[in-house]
Length: 258
Picture (cartoon, rainbow, N blue to C red):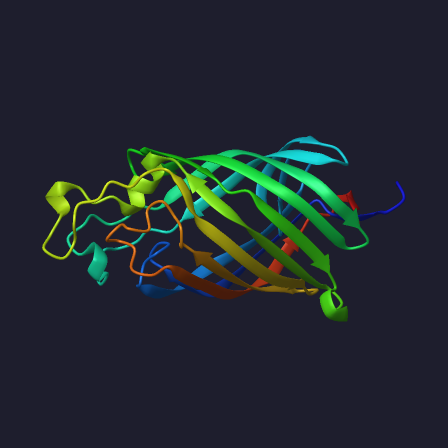
């Protein structure tokens, strides 16, 4: 085994639950709480990997950068109870898929600092999926093991601007003339800068269970669509906690860099 490596199970699985508080969409003044199942999945394959960095396919990897196949998603949103969207169709859940170039800046002794450059195509999740444009979310990403001397804990911080094309912005923020009312003017969302995001998460893997929490701040000041009548708030906070019980792991072990 190479120096700086140890072995861990090829896969680990578990099941649990989480509680999250999320805005209906970035810029919404409607906040909702969700109780959701939280499957725990770790897979340390050569190509497919699932870990605290998310689910991804590793297309190319060396000590300087990784080229990954990255994923993103958004939850479905009912327009019921959202005054800004009264009378508008519900927002379908979406999934995003595309490459991410992750450039390693520092990777040493439990500290990892990288620049992530994910460019994804977005689609609605429904019986006849629709293409709804692309997103680009460059960010500076820091991972730290054992923060503040807390053994076994992992801290992740990320910050950066968000961009999307006209089609993607329109999905969330445009209002057609037929949808306009006395209190909601028609609006055509442009593409381009769509605000900034700061996110943080902590997690720890115990012998029989995993715990985690996250917080995320979205700032829309200066976003190209900030004048949309559907934007009621320029800053949003999302947060959640989760716990999963580990129910199985692979007997096969694979080398993992520390």
